Length: 202
Image (tube, rainbow, N blue to C red; front, side):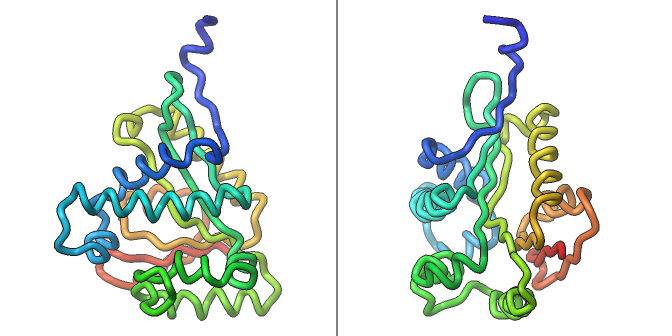
C-alpha cells in the first residue's frame, strides 16, 4: 500500500452503508434533547435501537434522492455523515414521508416541537420560487472529532454545498455543532427553545 493511501480520507455516498450511517448517527445523537423527549423513559440501549430504525429510513430516502454523504477515515470506517432533502420535492412529492420525518409520531398527527414556526418560513420561501435544501442530520464519530482531516473534509463539503444550493435550512439542538456550522458563513439563527435553534441561509 502506498503511504499516501494510509492517510487517505474519502467522501462517499451513503447508499450502500445505510446501517452503518444510522448506527453512527444514533450514537452521535443518543443524548440529544429531541430524542430524549421523543423516547422519554426508555433505556439508552432501547432508545438507540429505535433511533437507528427511524434514522435508517430517513437516510435511505435521502440516499435515493442523492442527499446522503459521508466521510471515510483511512481505515475505511465511516467517520462522519450528513443527509439532506430537497424540501419542495419531499413536501409535494412524498407527503407520507414528509410526515414521517417532521412529526414525532411518524404519521403527521404530532408535528415536531416548533415545526409549525419553521414551516411558515419554509413555505414562504417555496412560494417565492426558492429551492430549499433541508439538512436533517450531520455528525462526526467521537473517535474522529480530533482528526483535522475528517473535519476539513466535512468543512470543504459544506462550503461546496453553500456555493451550489439556493437556500440551506436546518434545526439544531447541539450548540457546539451549531457554532461550528455558523462559522461557515452569514446565517440567520433563530432560538426556538433553550437548546433548540432554526438555522437558515437564503
